[in-house]
Length: 170
Image (cartoon, rainbow, N blue to C red; front, side, top):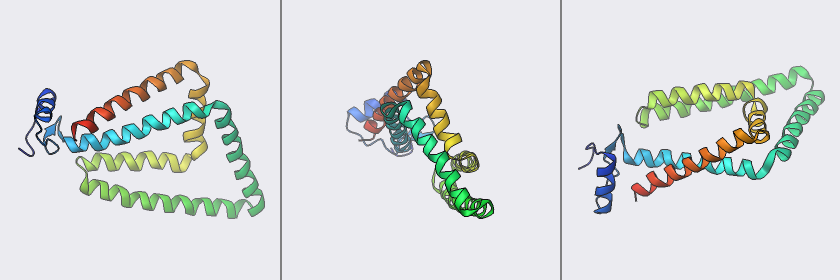
């Protein structure tokens, strides 16, 4: 029955009997929410794979290009105009994220926690920028074999878990 708690093994047993278990509750969340989170995990897994294929040389070139473009734009516009435009872009991004966080809080189970996580992570991203939050850490991981191996294993585990929970809802 919908909303009933179910154990992990019972979920698979019900699934194999052809019962629609998307509305059943597994570990505090309805199973269809586990499937949605699994889709995000699959996306992250795929991004890790793409980053691994791209490699450190191309990421380093992209980082240099981002830095050079920022210096060129700042030089052409003048420092004050460049900083004002950058500030307004960040305010616009934060405003749209505020709307997203409000929607998440209203419509997603445990939404308050997720909306806070969205806002905190994006605040860091917006104010530190793409190169310091994304490109430099990605470059560091791709240049260190042990970290790259951990990232590859995490991608594999994310992919298996994602497939598993997505499959459970079919």
